[in-house]
Image (cartoon, rainbow, N blue to C red; front, top):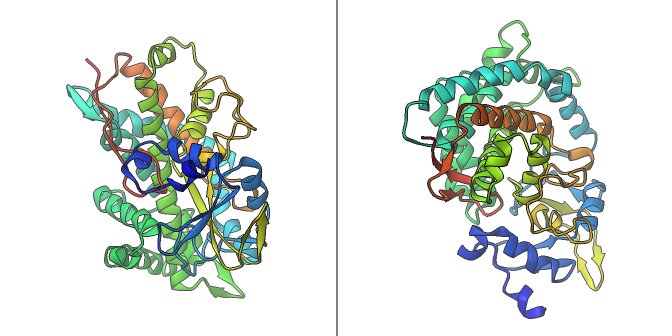
Length: 387
């Protein structure tokens, strides 16, 4: 058993291409595993119950030093205590069920427009032509920012997630400074105008103690919503289409209405979480069996492993579309549960229904290409045909 866990290498080609290998190693090892193949080193929690308990203890497992392995003093949604509560209150109305439901018709229109563009193509790409542009367009519309330069937005989102997972985060700063400058210009413009119903207007005009949010915090909050609002949803859609087309008869059963779509979505989130995990920082020493994680230490909550914990899920390495998905932990739990979880599910539901209706003969050309950063799991390319 020690030999198995000692071979853990999250950045190896083998484990990048199949994160379930990492999950199995972690679940066969110590409850708190010290991972020293990254600078700075960190600990990993993998058991479902340990992660669930940690996520519900925000005083011990802090958010404010960033959700990646590097120590980055953060703000906006990625913060703690009363400040986090205040910031979340600013943006939450746009992501409540009622607000999300009102977006369904618009999502259908966007999806139809995107699929119209590839209708006569012999081969196209799920990521490039559907799962990437759909969430970017809708989050831009929610925020109230232009959608006319989607490729530039994609480059910024890629840089943000790459920086989050890199041992050399400064490499990406120049590109991210361009994003910050762009967002700050929009914020200042909104502050000079009467407040409207866009989320960027609400962020720009929100105040603490009668003072606007600082430029830095307003920009960070906007960037966090923008990146989180498209990156993980893109991978959720791509991952699910990939599994539907690569597991025997799954796509045909879906087209024949033999599989319930919400079950597919929750099982995809369990089996292929778009975020394999997020990091917290300990505020005090925490002990798991004979391992003590010191205070002020980064800890990865490995959702990918927790979602395959056999103590919680029967036959966890099987994709089972009728599995009860209530305990899937991919959107986190507790006060930091993902704001956009219902929007992500709705976008995926709309995309899959449109694909089923318009392209019942959809076929996978090959398995495409994995997204780059080790913390994320999805397809940056997924070529298909429908003739």
